[in-house]
Image (cartoon, rainbow over the protein chains, first blue to last red):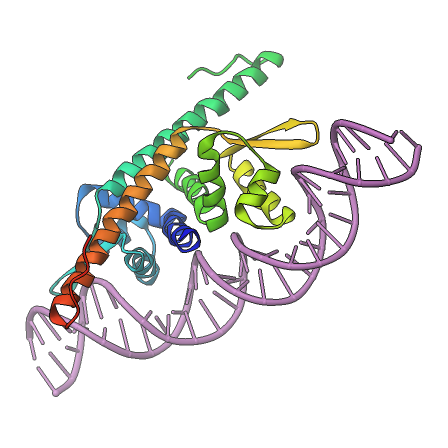
Length: 116
Length: 116
DNA sequence: TATAAATATTCAAATATTTATATATTTATG
DNA sequence: CATAAATATATAAATATTTGAATATTTATA
């Protein structure tokens, strides 16, 4: 039972592994958004946004709701935001590491050590 | 400040988007593991494991420690496990969705509805 | 029903990732 | 120092993803 589960999870993470799709998901933190709205927020063309949404949709990360000629998308499981939050924390820790490293480099050189 | 951050985060998620790398990270839940041990656990050849580790290393997800001719790897930030745990919960919710769907299909057909 | 607006799909070219194989590097030991 | 063991790197072929352009579909409305 190991192989398929990990394959499946990998697919999920792959779906998150694209800048535009991360921006889309961040937009959806505020609730439903129409494709139009996402287009504007992303500054990408219609087809590209639609393709990215298709990927998130196919992985069941996002759900569409049709209203007339508009389509509104939302994140299916709010726990996804929790996941993104944890990821953000990891990045922040990371940045602190980087800053510590830069600070140390700073001490050896003649620049003042950068602060937090 | 939006573009590069999301690019960076996408790189991180991409690094998680591979079955072998997820297995590696699961192995590292138990603490340090040597490349050898990972090789056995993954049933992949040496070079392949090394390549997957290189990807995790380059993204600063994992840190190597050399001891003689062995190299031990560990997850740099334990919060990564928290992230994997949240992901797991999302998958479980997902499975429940799938099961509910299957159950409903079952009612319409002549099979008994599968249970949790 | 013809048209326009919003979204989705198809397709192909460009780019990136994966995988296998071969080779290199590092360290311990005879 | 020669050799073996453990790990890493380079390379190329196979495969997958991304991107843009063109086309299709759906819905509302004149």
